[in-house]
Amino acid sequence: MGYAGYSPGHKVADQLTPLQQALRNLPVDKAQEVLELVEKLTRNVVRNPGEEKYRTIKLTNPKIAATIAEAPGMVPIMQEMGWIQEGEALILPQAVRLAHEVHVVGLIDAKDYHKKEAENEKRRVLRADKMSDEQKELMKKMELDRKEKEAEGPVTQGSTARDLGNGPNVMRAGDIGIGKSSGG
Image (cartoon, rainbow, N blue to C red; front, top):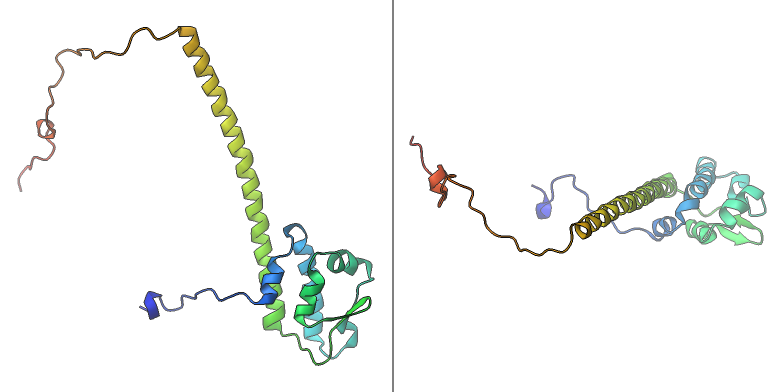
């Protein structure tokens, strides 16, 4: 038994970093596309830290503009990673080193999170559609029952107990053999 009753190897979830929180707050519909591009840009910088062409992102580039510049909250996320906005470009200073374990893995985790959220949203929509169909069917059945009862007319007699004949006379559970030991 591990510390505080947790089994060995059981990990308690750590607090999310500001970068992870920001990545999880992206809109679900655009998150996969945005995170794919940011991961590619980040991997290029991690693999080639000295090359200046990978340390500059032009926000006027049509693909970059469509994904990063127009995605809500994406420029502040890039700034959280260490990028600095200078005019129409994001520049990563030479002093800033992006780490694969922190930045790339964080982006992969965010992609996984958004993928699960998209799947969960699909399930929610399917459940809502399915439940509404079931509810519609149930409402139809209830309406048919109402019409049948109306056709029978009003209830003029209450229910009464009837004698069913000479059936078994059960007064206790023991009368039918429950609770009696067969020995042994």
